[in-house]
Length: 159
Image 1 (tube, one colour):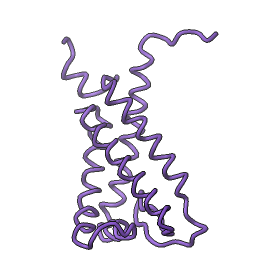
Image 2 (tube, one colour):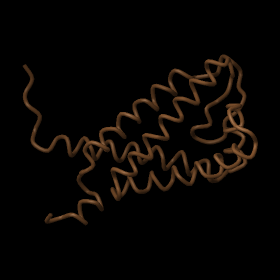
Image 3 (cartoon, rainbow, N blue to C red):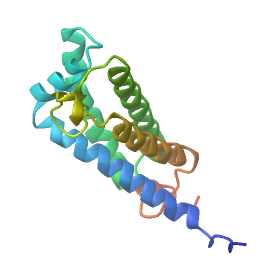
């Protein structure tokens, strides 16, 4: 039999979830924001949207990722930011699964410019598992948004 978890372990697990999910979103968004043309090209590579829609998504996505990532890292509006992060992860998994099922050979563009690659260079399963893991972190934060070292905690201290 295992020993019971120490008191407050779930708050510390939440801190790790918040920093990992927030850090990944922040890095991914910053890498894309520096190359919006590449971000748009990555969205186009999925062959899901017309050019105007792909241009909008490729331009707005990095801004949303940076905003959600920053909010998670500092712990402000944690639940809402985790919902945004979770929705993004679901969309990424769906997009990658769609590309895989249609036989496209693309890099996901998750951390910068994506696009066509050699079929042997695709990593769809790994990318989907990573995003599902991040989705699990987002779900944890939606259920348990109170974590140590957060602005949310400072704002609600004493309540």
